[in-house]
Image (cartoon, rainbow, N blue to C red):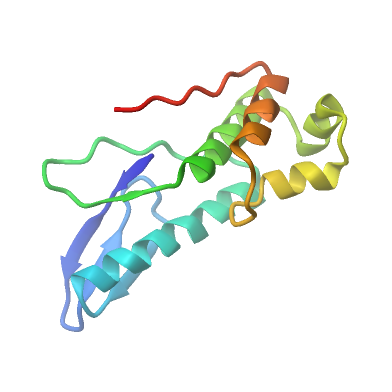
Length: 137
C-alpha cells in the first residue's frame, strides 16, 4: 500500500518520480509540497491503468529512509480488484453479471476517486473467487 518515491533536488525545487509507476511524475517548490503533490500524481497515474483495464504494478520495497506515498485502504482494495479482474480475464460487464448489479455500479466501483465501501469491493473480489484480507502491522 506504500509506493516508494525518488526525490531529486532541482534548480526550482524538488522533482518526484515513482520507479513502480513511471507515469506518476510531479514537482514542488519544497520537499513537503513535492511529496503532497506526489500523492495526487500517483492517484492520477493509477487512473490510466483503470481506464486501460491493465494491471497496476505492485509497490517495491522502499530503501531505508526512502519516502513513500501510502494509498488509502479503499483505493488499495480497488487496485487489488482491478488486478484480480485482469488476471482472471473478468470484464466489468462480467463482474456486473456475477454480482447481479447494473454495469454502471461496477463502473462506479472501479472509479478511483469515487467513494466505495470496502465491503462492496470485498464482495466484488469474492464474486471472482478472491478474498480480501486486512492485516494490521
